[in-house]
Amino acid sequence: MTATGSDHPALHTVICDLFGVRYPVVQTGMGWVATPQLTAATSNAGGLGILASGTLTVAETEAAIRATQELTDNVFAVNMRGDAPDVGARAELLIKHGIKIASFALAPRERIIKELKDAGLVVMPSIGARRHAEKVAAWGVDAVIVQGAEGGGHTGSVPTSILLPQVAAAVDIPVIGAGGFSSGRGLVAALAYGAAGIAMGTRFLLTSDSPVPDNVKAEYLKRTVNDTVVTSVLDGVPQRILRTELAEKLIKSNRIALLPRSIKSAHGFKKLSGASWADIVREGLAMKKSHRLSWAQVIMAANTPMMLKASMVDGRTDLGTVASGQVAGLIDDLPSCAELIAGIMAEAEEVLTRLTTKQQRSDEQQLDGLGDRA
Image (cartoon, rainbow, N blue to C red; front, side, top):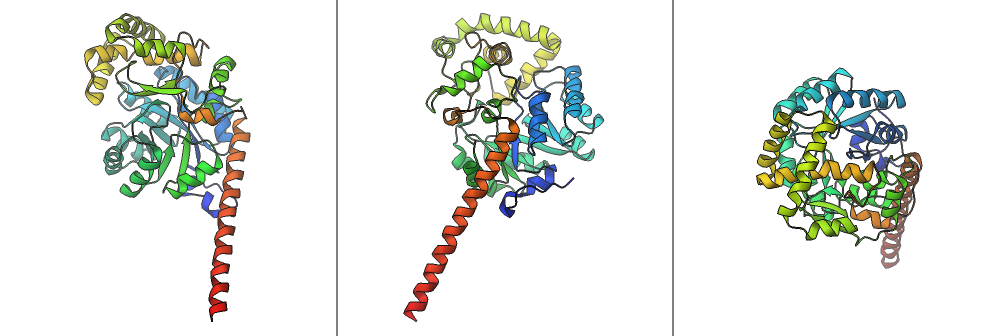
């Protein structure tokens, strides 16, 4: 399906045709946040909604896919963890239900990519380093989301302004910028860096369509750009979260003191997800290998889904961490997804028109100067 959107040709990019969407704006697959409602609202507004499945069982994922399909006739993606022990079963679900785009939080094995592509799906992993983009591009993925250090949740150390043009120059597949974007100006900047669009998490979390409790949204809205912190204390992998009283306490704690909490979280996630201990051990082994974690860090990794659930679902910021990009400090409203995307596209057109007009005036002045000298 090909969609046309903005009147400005620069804003109809290659991903509009690749995904079959109206606008080059992507809502990321945030665990506990990217529900059928938020995903459908984004897709109905002309962007690409991504349904999160990392915190769902396979059966719950299938139910969520069906729920999203009931809410939108437009294309949407489903996000999976590439290192999940049941990623094969999840991939089969996408094929079964006619999903057009598979999104991955961590790059899957080459075999999974091939299986999905053979079934006609577009495959799009998220990466945080040029070498990772080069690796998955060689495996045949169709596009990559490139998240810079400003992004929320698990993130790298290279700022978007450096990482994005670096990756765009290194691979010949569409690159989508993430980390620090929330506006039309940001979209134009991403295009100038060589991207084909932008992906946003925190900005979509802070919409009226987001399922996040109002009191948690209020925590975001009162923060500045300096009110996030990157820490690896939760699971051994750097994460950007809001500075809350709990976050500060966890950061000051030693890892040994956190182990009892992590073991309790692991048991809680097992019960919630329906996973067997064998599955959890296999997932732990995969994390240990891919992130070079110690066993203590692997055990601590159970903190992440449970502590995010406490805040994002239960509204308890005193019991859970709050993943956030730095861009939260620039956001002061809660529009609907439709209002958000319309505003981004209008601002992007305005910026491009202004830049074009300035350039035309400059060119005319130069021509006038040449005429005077002649």
